[in-house]
Length: 216
Image 1: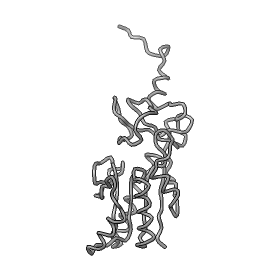
Image 2: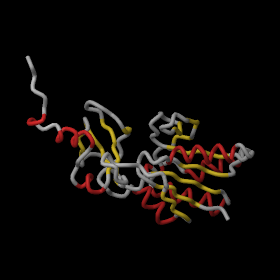
Image 3: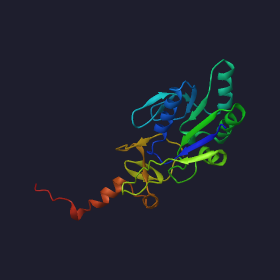
Image 4: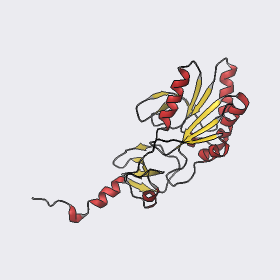
């Protein structure tokens, strides 16, 4: 039976890599897929992983009907044996409902990939709807690690390495940003609660009494 499967995890745990692997495995067997994405780090209309792999995808716009898009493709003689939706947390709940309808009405498997909570530890509306509707929710087994070595469970937004807790829910950025750029870092719950990033932990360790004294 076709399924709606939600693969979830923190940033940096290999979601997009798995999406690309699923695409490769199925296309290599002669199956035809449709890939949706939104706000990928590689730019519009791309599905990319941090390992450097990238493929073309349909960039989802505001108000776009994903079910209608698949039906239109089929009505023009195209094939859709499976659907991949990456960055699914950025989809609105209505679009998640449309993906569920693709499974139920068109008998097509849908594999959705996304992070569950935002930088404030609040559920993304798209991810919440996926948890509510998915036939299966799979937590990825590749564990991202906090700077302290513990399992990372939370996504933090940073500016210049300092964690911020205010701002729009969706701001595109990536891990390992520097200077005053908006970036993201995965943290364990303890350090997310304490707002302790790798940069602020290093700064705290370099207290004045341990800084080297200049010979000049």
